[in-house]
Image (cartoon, rainbow, N blue to C red; front, side, top):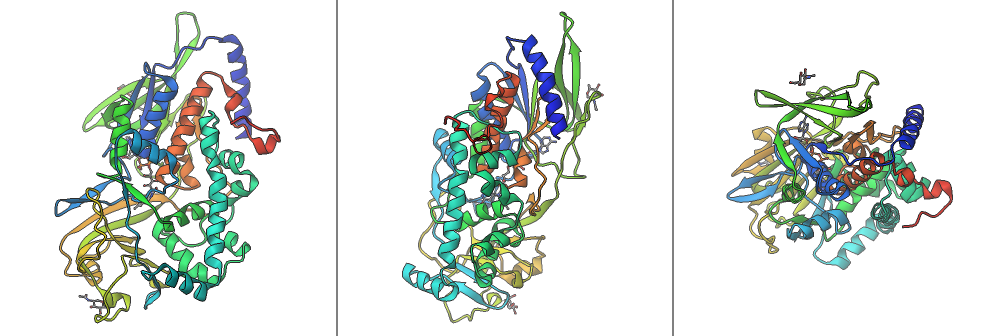
Length: 495
Ligand SMILES: Cc1cc2nc3c(=O)[nH]c(=O)nc-3n(C[C@H](O)[C@H](O)[C@H](O)COP(=O)(O)OP(=O)(O)OC[C@H]3O[C@@H](n4cnc5c(N)ncnc54)[C@H](O)[C@@H]3O)c2cc1C
Ligand SMILES: *[C@@H]1O[C@H](CO)[C@@H](O)[C@H](O)[C@H]1NC(C)=O
Ligand SMILES: *[C@@H]1O[C@H](CO)[C@@H](O)[C@H](O)[C@H]1NC(C)=O
């Protein structure tokens, strides 16, 4: 990797001397119209101006892992739902596009351990505080402080990016904004990190694990960075986009004036084309299929804005001169099932005589793997109903595998309507040293390399901005804002 970088550098320096006036790129391809690709189109338009042609390829629906399904004429999120109040890009996109921020109602949370609720929220804040301290000591506060400390460091990314700074790997990005402490987080587990700050096993099992199962479907052995990001899901003031989160994607694509091509990209070839002056231009040929029709276009720059799954109809990369090495990772399967009906209280160890209050149930590792979580789904169209109505509502069940009809009706008595969405949700996280590069080849970038550290809507937007800056600076040989690490160089980058 280092050798490759040095190689690029020396080749570039020699070209940089020869070429002083670099013409702008004429065309850019973005592959994938999820939040990553859509945000990339937006930031690329900002960086490269109005003249460059931007083609966005999408084989399925605009939005990708942001999607809704309809029950009784109401739409509900079946992919990504919650946005944190400190997710500044998502907030900015919603504002720019005139979309509404819909506050998610405060949930009545409960934690189920396979037999009963080991924790259940009270309506009274003070009662909750006493319960938490009684059961877990001050672990709750300690975890909150731990999350805030690292979140605060990570948020410096916005300053770096508004100053035009960008990074060639996720690891360098984390190191520049938060030093060793933040960069190290991807290398050890959240279990280790929290035990180091003195968090007890009971709190890890009954509070941390359930939140992680809910957000990543995994346990406390995920890396501490994604763990920290996941714990933000337990914060209040979360919101969702009125009309559905996917409207951000279609809105960004429209505002960036892209050409949307409904097709599946099958291969990307690096080509050298001789010019009249004897020099070569480098281009990428993108081949795609649109139904039974095959097409191809050439581009100066290509942004890959999709996860690369091993074995799953891969995109082929080819350069006769230099191999393009592509890192694919294993993804965690997750199924979201929407069910209208009353949750079976006795499944959760509750007696029928008691009123069933929880609106969000997380589970401990002992709860088995039928479901990871169950929560009341909020329609994307209306302000959520804050009154606890009758037991019948739309529940969102999260499970590692599809639920059989019998399993659904064991959880929700006489289910009215059922909608299912199956996802390859995010990488199987584990602490690891491998740093995924954003640069796959000369002017070919992989936005989703960031998912290896953590995968959320905001992380993809941050990666989109990083990729647009990287593509711009490398195109024009302005390398002074690439991989500047304030911490490593001991100098202050002007922000
Ligand atoms: C169930 C679930 C719940 C989640 N909850 C949250 C949450 O509450 N908050 C949060 O912030 N995040 C959440 N996430 C994570 C979030 O959804 C992802 O981080 C984010 O949507 C990833 O966006 P993306 O654009 O990178 O990828 P995707 O959305 O996967 O977009 C990639 C697009 O590329 C297209 N594509 C792939 N290959 C090709 C090809 N060869 N040619 C053309 N097109 C192609 C695909 O069809 C797809 O539309 C959740 C995810 C899941 C699955
Ligand atoms: C890409 O498309 C061009 C033109 O249709 C074709 O000549 C070429 O063989 C295709 N490449 C691949 C790898 O399919
Ligand atoms: C509700 O759950 C209990 C306990 O798991 C189970 O015995 C019962 O059959 C379930 N009810 C229905 C309607 O399936």
